[in-house]
Length: 105
Image (cartoon, rainbow, N blue to C red; front, side, top):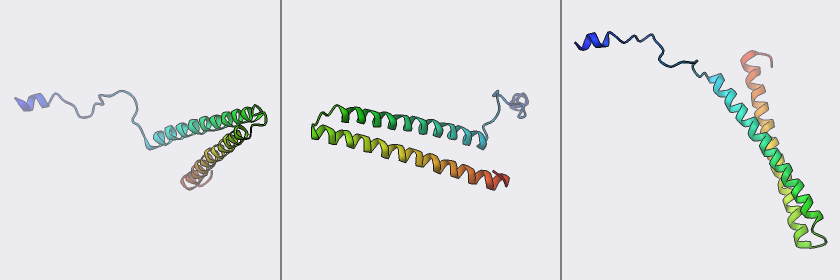
């Protein structure tokens, strides 16, 4: 009786609709997420730079406030350089991967 119940199952059918996830699909999704994070990081860095400039102008000769504003501007610039450096690194890795997989970029 157990064998007749198992005969009802067909292993060739795909119970889940849609297409399978491939390695290329995963790479594309990670690339899109990385691009979003890079754009968001640069946007936040620019906001820090602008806010630091506003604080610097509003310091009105207060050396402590001016020093804090300069530090904020410097941190924004460093953050932007780090995020853009990661973007350049990811772009370079993608270029090299495309070169070796297809022969031409």
